[in-house]
View 1 (cartoon, rainbow over the protein chains, first blue to last red):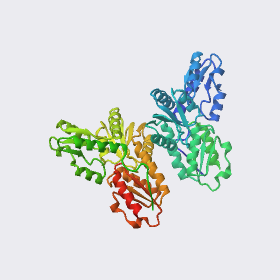
View 2 (cartoon, helix red, strand yellow; view 1 turned 45 degrees about the vertical axis):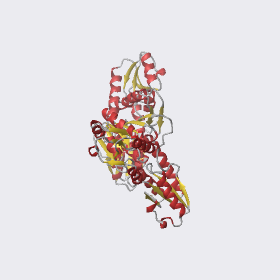
View 3 (cartoon, one colour; view 1 turned 45 degrees about the horizontal axis):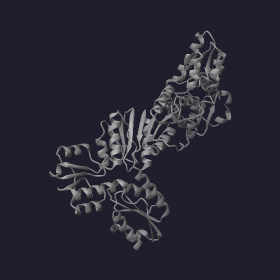
Length: 277
Length: 277
């Protein structure tokens, strides 16, 4: 069986940058190092960090004195960051620059009187962070859902960096008809767009698709949805352990894509298993 | 045969305002009165104005000294207005306030560095006027067509006041994905929205629809398109002279809508013909 790996599979620039930073900090720090929430949404990668002594905390309140706190790629909630600084903890900001951008836009546009709409998942760390920078009303619209009705003359629309383009397009269009002014800032990151476009063409060329990455990873789940719409034989797995031979019966070529937070060694593990089949 | 007239058929607030103004001006003016282009897109109404001595010119260059120039509801091209004032002609501005708004937005947003996109008909007087207020690049996108590709970080989108909502929605969404920032100002006038919604529900309740208004009237043509999509037995006529009895074979209820520039007496003429059938 031929295995075709998407050019853009695996770590994006932002994740690689943050992962490198955490390792550097862990090597140099005198005291313990923790990340505020899982550094990336990949359980396998997080486990490796754990082995290197880099822990994960859910809030600044849990962090012992003398600890270095690393803000993960998805960013942090503003008040948590302030609490860490108020306590005099050493803070290393690993927020992806593509996430800093919507945070800054949320702050600026809501200060200018815009009602903020974010197309994304309200329970996702990135969105919780972006929302925390707003100074006025915010509505989070889940991809695929219709924006709720609300009164506002000026509306600003942002997207989760990993949002599927068509969802952003639809919500912006709907709001443009309802409100006097809609200011849409396309905060979908370039990497997301390229990876999704790559996955789309890969899915059209193969007999089955395996998407590798954390089940808690938004961008990986979106990749799987995109591939499944084109090639129904699409599976989302975290590692090769989940794969089953009967999924690939009659397949000649299998496509392989992976989320922005999936380490190369995990992708390689899956590719190896498929090649051996 | 029952005739159901849409609540919103006929003159809108803006047209009525301009028509009243022209009559007032004609009654009070010492010299001749002309309108810069047809005052409204309704040949029957324009003919009546002609009978009252109110002429139509295509450009300021044609206007004799001592003439009062009235700017029609659709507005005028900025340079023409300047030429009229430079020549010392008396100018009465009949531009609909709902058209002054996109003119002002075109000026302001292009001055702020936005590439302007207008969803509308580039050959329509209103759009020629709005475009003339821009200080930078402008792209006019015809409703139903895809916006052409162009390079710009910041894009502002306006609509012809009589644009069908769904066309504005689609173009704004498309652009939001392509450009960093898209600022959409909904310049579709309230009257247009209400009239289109009314026509939509009327078309669903009747056996045939007659839309009355100038063949050169954008808003009337849009009304006819909207009705035809729901009730294929839809006819767009300027007066009752065009109607044919066989169009209404087997019809129990006929719906009647009319454009924003259609005088009541023209609507009544059509309604009378239908009732007599």
